[in-house]
Image (cartoon, rainbow, N blue to C red; front, side):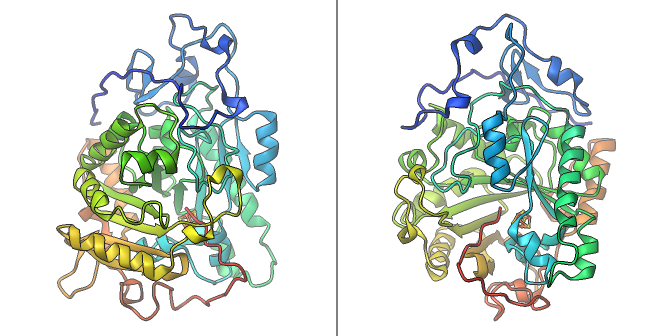
Amino acid sequence: MRMMKNASNTPHLAEDSGSESEDVENSESEEDEEEDDVVDVEDVGKAMSKYPLHRTSNNVNGVMVKRKSTKAKREMITPELRKSLTKQGYRLVGSHSGVKLCRWTKSMLRGRGGCYKHTFYGIESHRCMETTPSLACANKCVFCWRHHSNPVGTEWKWKMDSPDIVVKGAVNNHYDMIKQFKGVPGVKPERFAEGFSIKHCALSLVGEPIMYPEINTFVQLLHEKGISSFLVTNAQFPEAITNLIPVTQLYVSVDAATQDSLKKIDRPLFKDFWPRFIKSLKALSAKGQRTVYRLTIVKAWNSDEVEAYANLVSLGKPDFIEVKGVTFCGDSKSSDGLTLKNVPWHEEVVYFVDQLAQMLDGYEIASEHEHSNCVLLAQTKFKTSDGGWNTWIDYSRFHELFQRYQATGECFTALDYMEKTPPWAVFGAKERGFDPVETRWRRKEKVTQGC
Ligand code: SF4
């Protein structure tokens, strides 16, 4: 197995949370600050570690793990938080993980269309599980649709559940939620049956999955079940990105292009959030498998930073750039003045992407999902000789390559598991990214949340 080195890191506690005070349940008490000299690795050691943890001092896999306290570690999910998240439709797993049924999963069960990842990469939305092994995050983004009820922190300071427990709990809860669609009008029987065989996992529900010290074993367990992994990180843990084993597609959220706007939009807890962000982008460029920048355009906030975005692309050299108009999640005091006026029209997103493409070498618009206001730029190495694209993924091939990597350490690249994009999904097609085998269903309100 190929091992990667882990450099040492310096802890940065959240002294400045970017204008916000931390949630009460997550603020550090003085007692918690009392530490002895022993790194609290018991939790980590008990977990089913298939991948050795890269550890220097109390840095585990690039995330600081809080030292052992004389008191037992607390659980990330407090009873109040449990109540609040359950009310929002989350199924909580163990003490720090969650799973929720995505609206696109429900939509595709009914044959009403999949999410943009169906269009861009061929995922089957009705067989997709949206989950996270860490509900905690190091940011408090203004457009977070969880209305900031999730815990925050800059280090792992909670009790830890083993990855097999988390995977099993997430899968069982997901199937339990699918079961509730039995006999629901409109649900297609064959899609319902397929729903009990998960093919994809979107690690982007809420929180920062890469903070979970056992993320490598977690991902491996998914792959062993034939489940692909789409992991999204907020670019605050660069070493954790370096230490991550191959995932099917690795995302970095690039919510703004300058230090000032990133602070305003992501409201990071880390004081050194900008160097962390830049280091994370550079770490992405060293990964061999498929990488993606996800840009969320907030009109009048970051929509005129095209040139600065182009500079960031040169750091991470992602295979793909997804550009999405921000989704308005309703009025929320914590949204810092974000209103419907900040939501761009799809044509405005296309215009932004077109400008960006002109500033970049080797990228072109490959696909769009008009339905969710999202456009895909891809490196031209994914272009076919007949003018089409290979943005889709050969999932079986990915799993073969991953198994080989595990057995021999042999690396593989994004080009080894690409697949042809169907004509309806290519930019410029009359379907505008809507799969013609599906039936368009117009919702009364235009809410297109998804991961
Ligand atoms: S939006 Fe995300 S969670 Fe929902 S089906 Fe698509 S990939 Fe899965």
